[in-house]
Length: 300
Image: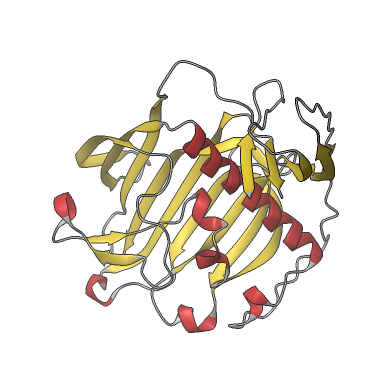
């Protein structure tokens, strides 16, 4: 059986109720080289100390964008890009584990309205306060990012955007080409940019393209920019639909969505319509502090 756990704040972890015998142990952390060993458990308590080495990637000095085909995602990625995508998966895995072991909710405040020439929101701005869980309510599905709204959004068009856990899911990675796009700044962070776009068959549908931003020092996810690759037929006055999201460290290196800005750019002279959102609070089920993001995994 496969058992996964997050370590405590001091880096320790305990795996209980394991039968005596051989156990394969794999320990990972964002920005570190995984450590793997096999040990034989004896009756009683087995103690083990494992040290992880920081991961240092030799990234290309020249950015070369390859061709994107329908088979590109499943043919294997070049070494540096494959290592970067492993770090994206590490970010996602920690979020999944934290949400499972220590459920929490996010308090979100959003403001929407037209953006004036000075950058401020003007007109009939709308303020929404909501509570949501840490995982996306609707997982990403290829070609199904635009759909009719239901409930409070009935009669409107809703766009489902990918979040941390979606980026590492095969539903996303098997249907998008990804490229190493060099190093730059994302806000105050020095980052590595990974671009993505739907494979050719999916690009003929409405889907998403954009960029993933990982910190240069440690490879933690800090930003995500997504755009509709096409505008739906019923929204021809729209020229572009873009969302710029920023993540912050919640526990250890576990990234959580912190703020975002959705921008609808229109054809003609109409000002952009924007919706900004930010997380103003995190509620845990109890007061005990959650552990760091080191992941322990055992497999028989």
